[in-house]
Each structure stands twice: as C-alpha cells, then as structure tokens.
Length: 250
Image (cartoon, rainbow, N blue to C red; front, side):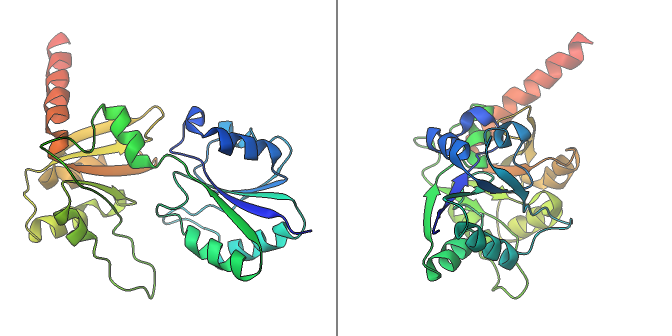
C-alpha cells in the first residue's frame, strides 16, 4: 500500500478553529502523529486512528526529527490516510519542509492542510489588527531559536524592518530578546503584549519592550507568543485603564 501523508494544521488550540478539511481528515485517518500541544478535544476527532505522540517541548524529552520522518514513511506503506498533526500552521516554524522532502524523496504523496497560526489567534483575542492602515503595513513572524549546527538567525533585523512582529518560542529568552532588540535600536517604549494560550482561556500582559522580561515571567508555562509594535498601543492603554478600574472597585 502507498498511502498519503497529510500535514495538518491543528491551529492554536481551540477545536472549533480547525478547518473543515482538517476535521474530515482526522475522521478518516488510520494513524495520527501529533504534537505535544494539540489538545484532547482535537485528538478525539480521530475516532478510528491510532494516536502517536511525537511532540517537541523546549527543555523536555522530545522525539528526534529523523525518527518522526521514518515513522511517517513506514506508516504510509501500511495505511491509506496518515495525518501528521502540527500545532498552528504546518508551514510556520513546524519543520514541515524536512518531512515533505523526506517523504517525497521516497515516492510518498504529501499534502498540506493549513491551520491558523498563533499570531493571528492572538490578534483576534486582543481585538487588534496586526496590520493597520497608516500604522502598520508589514508583519514579521520570527523566532530566536537556532538549532545545533545551523547558521545564525537574522530575526533581529526582521523585527527592526517590520511594523509589527510576532516572536514565536521566545518566552524563555525574553531578557535576551529585549536586550538584543534595544541594542539594535528598537525603542524601549515599543508596545509589547505577551499572550499565553491564544484562542483558549488566554492570559495577556501588556507593557513595553523594556519590560519584556518582567512580563514573560508573569505567565504560567503554557504556549506563549510575544507581539510588539505600535498597533498594540491602544490596547495597552485600555488594559491599564481596566486594571485601574478593578483596583478602585476593591
């Protein structure tokens, strides 16, 4: 048998943000290889499938990419519908290209099913458009993470060049991120939001780039995204006003 491997975006967490195609394929799948952060409500849609956890979490035991690649290829030789379920969108910081290249080199059909990436879910939670007429005409998705043996990242230059930036997988490096950006010329007063569990019962803390390390330390360990740019200034003022009202009401 030569099955198809579907790289499916699970979105940022909320099950009702899955695409119709993603939900259909989960229902048809015979085996699903899923990331660590995919919630149970989404996995429950794979009613017929064997579930295999192959997640990666910073600082924790994780499955090597080469092992994931081989397991996907082996599964495609046994099953008609194989789903590789990735958090967010498969093509945004998901190492999808490695899996696509590995499988296609072995004659295995691969299809990609897009998902909602965390930055878009965060903007929706905040009620903030990440691009705004007259304020922000460019948006950068970046990560400071660099794997062993890889060339240095140009994420700092990308953030400086964009009006709005979304920094993925950066909560643990918040002090270094703030220092690097300010050293490169980014204004310390640039509005920042650090948001945890976007699209679900999220928590967002507002402040400035200079306060980034303090903001990130307030969160509790869920998936975190850092947003920065002038589009967030109004939201930051609203958050400060709401905090002041709560204090007065006590």
